[in-house]
Image (cartoon, rainbow, N blue to C red; front, side, top):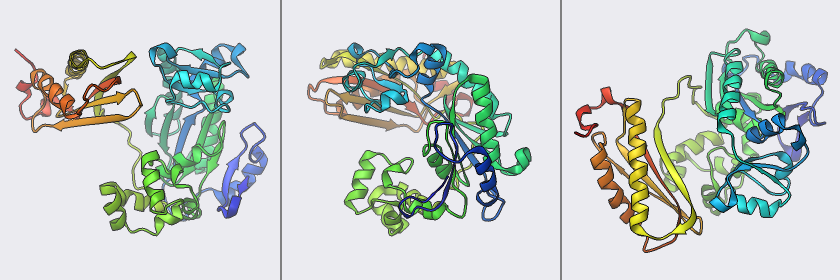
Length: 395
């Protein structure tokens, strides 16, 4: 439908099979006015986002789950968290990253399923294969979402909207799963659009409407703005994109650091990022959630040592090395802190293990109960590109 809620600029919602949006013929009729046509920009970006991916795979493979609340996640007695929940469970307030024990309080009748990552990866490979039939420039963000740049494509008469619809149909036919699609002239707006009409939605934000759409977008809906940043913006009187637009890039940089200039661009509906075909790994890490809170310093250091060792070995097998290390500590009250150290040369195992205790003590734990520990190595590069690759392996 051509939505104009609360004065919002017209955005195209195509039918999703659930009674929302335009029917296929009506949507086709609107495309002449709403599709890009090269009027203002020459980029056509599609964001594909699978609907409740893990849970949908479980429902597909076990039809008896249809219509029932389904949670995919870790066991509550092991401090598990929700990986995803189907839309039935979401009506009870269940959401991703929520502790499983909390999710089951919200929805005690939910069916809890342990993730089957091998299955999800296999299905994801099918989906990514479909996307690559429609565009050379495909940028996977995770197992269940990706960007496509279809600028200049001759498929579907060059219509990004039609390409998105064809992709959705192919995914449904091949995997028996639904995907939502967002179509716009940059990544920020395409991703925002894909979440507006879920599940099985198709939303287009054309170039003529991008800036005015962003002005009425609640600040919490801006991709990349988390709860903490949203709270700080609200203190500054920033509730919508229009409020954000009142601040200059310099002012936003003063309040939020270097990312402030990025917020200034988003406020204007701008996002110059390209769709990156090859995404090199920027970090490698692991973490552990304890079944019970721990306070023993020696035990926690032992866990961190093992995590560092395992992470360096993973990098070494790929002939990679890292120049930065971060430890993450999450306390029993869910407060989380990180401590990071960067180096001029690649980390070897001995140096990394020495830094663990230093970073841990910088966290100033003072016997606080800890529920999760994690280690991440970043600023990754090929060993062959390192200044002194001989530092990598211990004798």
